[in-house]
Image (tube, rainbow, N blue to C red; front, side, top):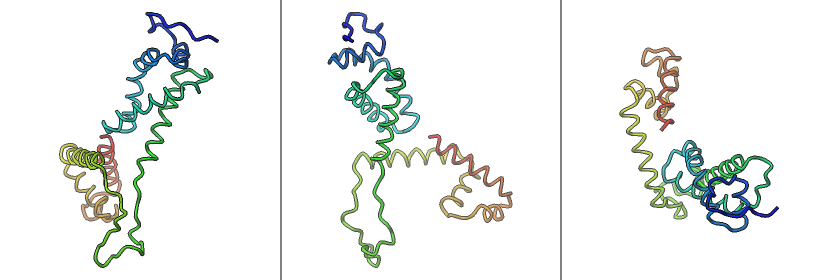
Length: 193
């Protein structure tokens, strides 16, 4: 099937017609697809990553992947389903890349007596440091402004001091269910950021 001709009214072309034009090397057709899907892709990625820098970078990576693999679109499903499939795979690959190497604390090669850390340990990049500082500031703000004093205390005891629910309930003269419920609400607030 021959690619449709690009005309002044490209906005009226279907996604499939635009894909054919993009496959034929038409960059203007890709711009139309980009404009058509940018907001939806951005919102989809933002819901999953919650970090402005990662979201913007991932959305651009999605569209690079779409452009470079548009020839693999076979019209077996709507283009929207295909582009969101590319988006999901791009997000998944970012999560794989994001895994930070871990070092066992029980490793025999580490000199535990003088605290010497292996020089091969990865040094965080400036962006990673900035992201870390942003996350810490965001969590600190949530803890201080969204959690009640009781939720802060429970979170401290259970998650930072690793005290069991039963011990916390006994110490604070509360039921275990009340402690669990408050911890659940606190985690929900902190994870919703």
